Length: 231
Length: 231
Image 1 (tube, rainbow over the protein chains, first blue to last red):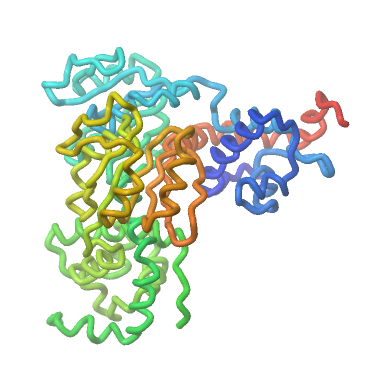
Image 2: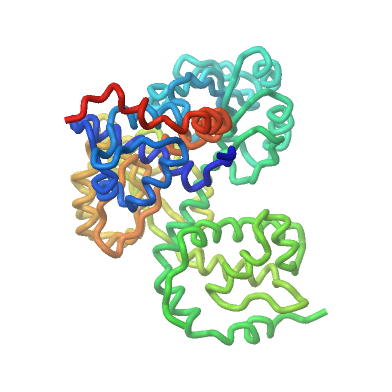
């Protein structure tokens, strides 16, 4: 077998498996077939088998999956058996909310540092952590073994932070800015683009009306370019 | 042409087009080919043409796209030409951060109400808005024309809120809980599951090591079920 990576879609479904298996386990269910799991998760049974086969053969024909073992195994696949050290860069509203969100630490994601460049914030505390000036970020990342940077800075500050990140040993960036980041090879990124997400919801809400409108105007091209002077 | 809907993937790319075209427009660029757009956005030119063709023919062979018109058209497709009224349910950390996030309002997404059930929060103000008791939610949704609910409540409160939402005329739910929501037909949902997103990042960081480990153990099945008593 070659060392091929799994698709982005699989990587995004893995936490969902983990979450559902955790809930099933909490209910005292010890084994489950891919069909039952399929019904609960609204993913086809063949998709489930295919997803999990990327990592090994976890099911037994006629038996199904051992819930606890599969749960633990997916936890390991997700790296939840290790502790991850995170720093938050940008102590604004989103940064604040993430620092106060307890669930991350209970899964092994420990926020150990907060950085900002706003003089009014430096030295203030958020949940026992003192906000440090971003000038100290470079040496902090070198001195401490930080795995993941949580980026919640305004667009204008992104460039200078990226230079620091790209020279560090950081392995992942959790990106809350609405920019596509230029990261050196080896640094993984996961985007949470809230404005995009809200616009996607708005699209879904408007979809029926929009599709109807465009289907009625297949000759749009000519009208569309009428007001534009061709050069 | 039948009235088929576009895929989820297209719906998620539309905001990205909107964002990039806005930036290109700000730079004073008035027209762009799908090839140039492709390079900037890291999406293939044929994908771009295919995505946009869902809504009409916006490009002209040998001319490309008129940046301003396409930007406005995608804005309309995303429903940004209308004002949307939102309420936030759950005035915790994430709820707070979203209410204070100014970019939503500048795109036409106006938060007009905040609800919680915590007695200590009721009556307090977040950015000019008074937190109301969730008991008033049902009549509020009826009396005001609310389009979207932003759901940031703990898991235990979800069920009762969903009953209210499903009986209302709400069109969309922006879901920050880590539950899959059971919504009546016609209500659209967009999930922002932060814990899932962080676990996906963790997976990406661990991927090389994990794939290597599993590729070396194709006989995992037998080992895996050894400790399990078969019944």
